[in-house]
Image (cartoon, rainbow, N blue to C red; front, side, top):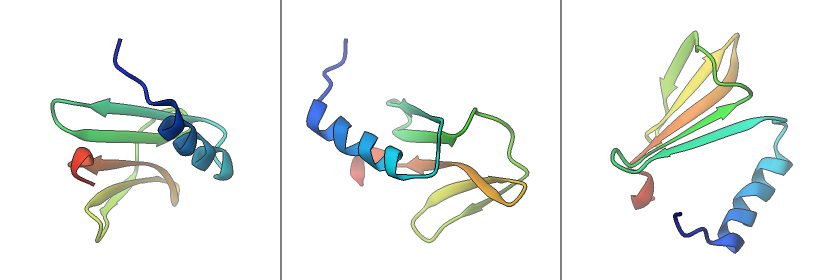
Length: 75
């Protein structure tokens, strides 16, 4: 099992709690170094945009439903 650093995980989970999201799905692809975050159940987007921060934001019906963070370990 991968080592989990509890204090850092707690900090991230507190940020989720402070958001308006009731359901957040997070997946990290270590080989590609990409973090995928879905707000709500994962589903199809009808639009997306690449932000100035090189994060891909995914939308459905005008609301952010997730984002993709590339080169995650370097941030």
